Image (spheres, rainbow, N blue to C red):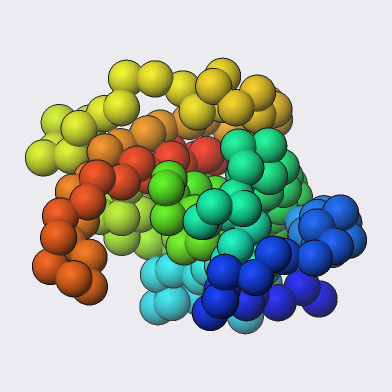
Length: 174
């Protein structure tokens, strides 16, 4: 199982190919898996991307590394979608990819449709559609049945500054 690691220094991340293989293995572990103890009361279930933070944020984070990590998240979400049992067809499975703060990216299962719509606002909400495609821009492969939606947010950082962030949702989005 891969683990998340914060980047507390600017030291170069070592053995990136091994870390990418571990991420691919993590995504493959979702093949045939869907959480059996998921209930409607849970509303939301998620897995954060299990990588070293410096691989997707900071000076070492190349676009190529980000692309590969995003593709593994999408693949994991697709495995969950395909493994979803018949009694859970109302659940929505989504890979949420944040740019530039990609370390907060995750795979989500929503058991409550209203909760899903609260996390992924409608296109007529206060959030601005990005008007582009991250899948096209990064060359991501979207499995059949997966859709893409990008929203632009303004978020306040720990330092009080306002930052722009894009959140990309891949999967079962309205």
